[in-house]
Amino acid sequence: MPEHVYIRRPRPSDQSAYLAAVRRSRSLHRPWVTLVASPKGFRYHLPERGKSSKASFFVFLRGPEDLVGVVDLSEIVRGCFQSAYLGYFALEPHAGRGLMREGLAQVIDHAFRDLGLHRLEANIQPGNDASRRLVRALGFRQEGYSPRYLKINRRWKDHERWAILSEEWKRPRA
Image (cartoon, rainbow, N blue to C red; front, side, top):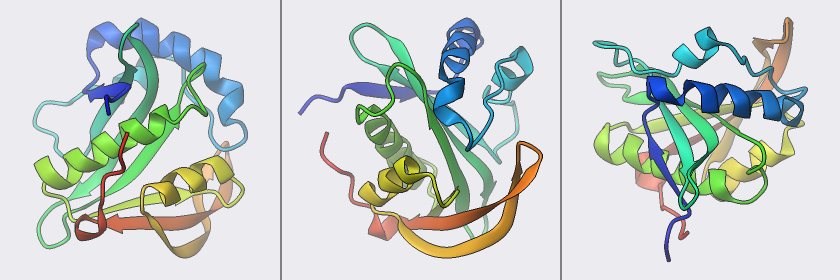
């Protein structure tokens, strides 16, 4: 079955498309997170020479190329841990169409196969049902609950910890 999306590392030339998509998508992510539509916010996703503790990927629609979403692997720890945090967000008008599931699956494949990671962890606010459904559909399991875990919009928010190990990963069909 053909894939509807592909992933790649962000490029400086993606800035205007990214900023426009983030502006269109702000209400989609309220109250979970505030997306930053600024050049500095965009630069966070660009690869940094010599820095291997994070990796960002843009998810693009095939056909008429359009930015579908963003996936970040952050706090990549090597050594005996081989782990990273997984963050992601969809962009309008592509949210709710299964495209981020495809893109996230591609990033997870890359993280386990190419980067050699053993564990990915996603932290999700309890009321964010769409995000919880997404990681559950990809095989993540809920590991725990962290009260006042992350400061979002100037307030400490509780989060559920979801994780998957490389040996548990079974890429879903497109």
